[in-house]
Image (tube, rainbow, N blue to C red; front, top):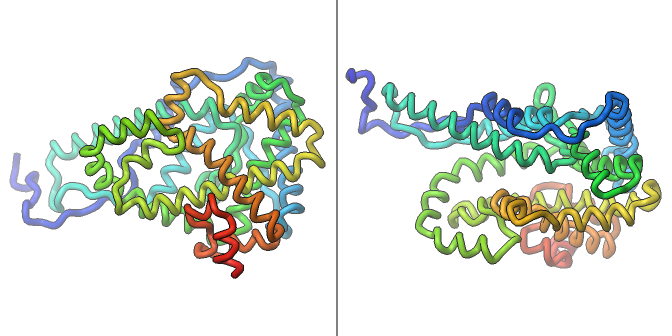
Length: 363
């Protein structure tokens, strides 16, 4: 090893920007691992694409009418994709979302060949792990609005056609009704980020702050592994990620969880309010879909807990109750004060105490 290869032990630590993941490899790994979904004819596939593309346009129109948000904005086209297409977009969006995350690295100076090799191994292993995770999620996601994907990372609404078709078949519900029902939910998410100008960068800033401090939280969590394992066995309302965090990250995570619970609950509320007028079989869809969310075999349920999917299901329910309660008390115009600024977003404790949010924001 030469003198140039040896980092200066007295030099300050530097930080890299972005997560140490080979995103292209993650997308390729996920696409290779994910099953293709139900086999359909070309005609059936074309009909589903047209149904979903139309549902996204029509659905957002209904969302705007109900919520009063974004009434003058254009309605972009949705991207109807297969499972590998969702994985490709997801890796793109995650890479952009986390591009400003700063993680500590070796001390400044010329890195050694060993350090460079270790970094390559780390990013490759992380890519393989990310690919495996995305291959699992790609079989579950029906649709998603990603604020950081698409041309110039300006946001894209994706509808995963094979998953929607598989879910519809499993639920035995009307094709047009189910497509519109799913599209209303995802169009609500798109409108949240396009009609509320500060929300996208606020979300990025919170994720950046949280992820930049994750290493210290995870390191400290190694001392609490028995307690973490016990919590995972006894609770379904938390994810492994949440349990791994130390005190310094808890405050940021609480804000992120409150925000994502609000966004999911708002979409659930809109689906239920819009549904009866435009989706004739909405009650059947909601009942069967809710039962399906809670189902799955023991392995699937374990993965849901470890990956936070089960906690996300709790978010749907808690968030919907919050929005239902607030709208019931002060109407949609009163609820829309939530979009005024980050200060008017509900705090985590207020998600289960909507009256506290109403009192704080409206006096």
